[in-house]
Length: 125
Length: 111
Image (cartoon, chains in turn purple, cyan):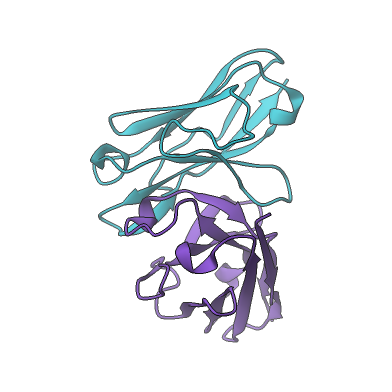
């Protein structure tokens, strides 16, 4: 059974930093691209970042480019999102997701078939 | 404003059929990139409903179907049930933005 367990959310002041983690199980972690998607209160889904199987290719939404860093540790089946210089508009529930197909170079065109439970990040003074 | 345009809301009576549109452009759906659909119940993570335009993951009822034509895609729900009441999102890729993109979401209400 695929499971993606998230941790690391919470309250942080503007300008602060936070690190989100997503520990996966039930599939060959190193074979699948992964992503982070967020949802601000009462709003829709927004792409944040994605990472290829090896970590060599990373993609960021313009709104977080230069502030957020996505990484993965294939030896620990863990996906991470380091968030720096946080702003009020980063307040959202963050979800990690797994690509639906293994070993694909066109991973940005793929569906994401399993998701973490979500973790709330609140940026406020 | 989302690059993919969805109606904010649709509604239908139990047993009826509804469709949700997802309109893009020549740099995303119109360029041939796949469209995927998600269902999101309140307070829960998205659930994959349709992938690669027309395909249903195992476990998704065949009441849900997807189609794509030109720069648009649609999700159809037949035989509406109360449990279908949720938010629905389309997803694709945009080559100009070089980003994954989502529609703004559509709230389906079962009357």
